[in-house]
Image 1: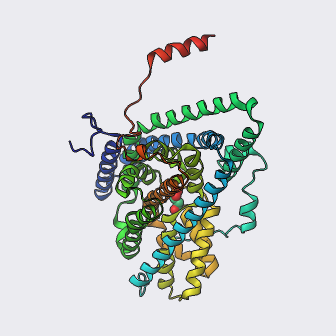
Image 2: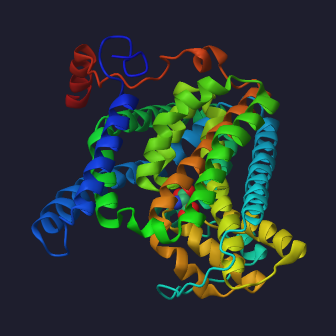
Length: 449
Ligand code: ASP
């Protein structure tokens, strides 16, 4: 067994197992699709792909989502309380905001440039597959108003990330202001945070099987035939996504933090597979937070803010899709957007990403906001609808990698990155879930009173 596939103890590491699950799922799903084994209502469709695989995959995604809200709340309150210097909060906020906007703007500018040069879509004449009803961009004023929850319980139950972030930061700051009497509360929240992190580790243990199911189902249902018709769009989009992942993000990481790009990319792999299979930055928050703090050495005081903030406002991969899709559809309809049009697209895409959360398929809704702004026909989106589910997976992996890179840069600049953890290949590796039997007994005694 190679080093990459082992954790040094002759056992396969979780990342290796998840990747095996991913590849096996792709192969099985494609085989089912190519052999036409899953006609709707048939045995395979009913009991396997939309039965077993669907149930296991959904249960896993739900388990991850279940942790997002309590994890963000507790870790962010702990983060603020442990920050040590309240002014740092403002700096972390503005630095991460600036970097998120910068990376998104670069992503879409590169996407538009490559797409224009490649000329995708020109001379094509395609009938739209299905109608797509778009949405208007929320005005900036509403985005700002919505940051403040009028009911924090509502915000928590709806998973409104920006509202939860606002509430948690304010609560953390006020705990600091209350001072000594709040000591017990801080200790309690710290323990709750630790318990949540342990839950993430436990749930990650089943990831290899869940990833297998999620991918096998997606591939069996979608197949690759759809891609043939849109090959130009798919190839240019994937090429720009890979360029961003392996050139732009590493370049920005090196430039602003001089951290090792290879170590970063190696440790990001696991998180990328989670993002890829769930197609949701939000559902991946628990894994991103764990990767950033326990594998990459970012202190919780920074990571607890930058990760959920990034999952909400930073979507480099989605911005790239919007850039490529805009050029593709403008070319198909013979619309010349001109420089001003493209600058509008860049601004709209950046703004739209701030107001929308990272959940599956949201990229298309953002695209409809961009189209409405530059006057492209919304039904053009119907053309790319069919292939979007699989492309969503790839761009979500790019989105979370951007979140992790910015977290490292900001933490490094604030002296909140533990380089011994960053450089230790084994730091934070999930190596089975152990139960300390003595502690178990002691706790049972406490619980019995
Ligand atoms: N699924 C993406 C995410 O969660 C958003 C999108 O591009 O649709 O980051």
